[in-house]
Image (tube, rainbow, N blue to C red):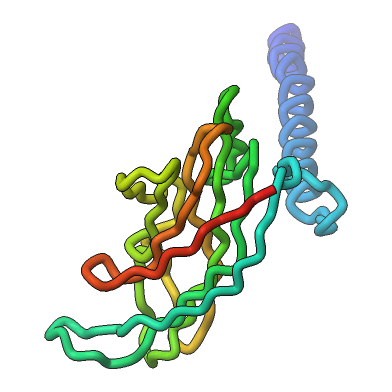
Length: 192
């Protein structure tokens, strides 16, 4: 009888440990199924990145058409390039993060739309169609801020933007719009 008492006490010592382990496992399973089945309401938590409004805006509404060529150099369609407006901003969003200009500098942002009327998706380097000059210089600057290559699905329009860091005191800002090797149209900006 003494021997049976030892076996019972030996096993009863482990029973509370087993019960505690089962309770812990049950709590973990309950918590994980509860969190994965919770309903998420879109728009309830507004954690979007916001930036300050532009310091100046100039509406341009300039439309251009450029040839869309295949690998053999044959024109297969036209690419429509619309420059909607130009903005001066102290803040921009680059790759989902806010970028702030340093003192004495600002960002010139060109908002554009690219329309692909071709039956296939295309990838366009939008900055190949736009250069900028300042202070009557002959130096042409390419956009530092861009989304290139811009993928435009077949028979659709995609918005994009091109940005140039400039000095606050820069004057006579001119855009040069056209193909890299072709003639360019000049558009003088008057941002106030």
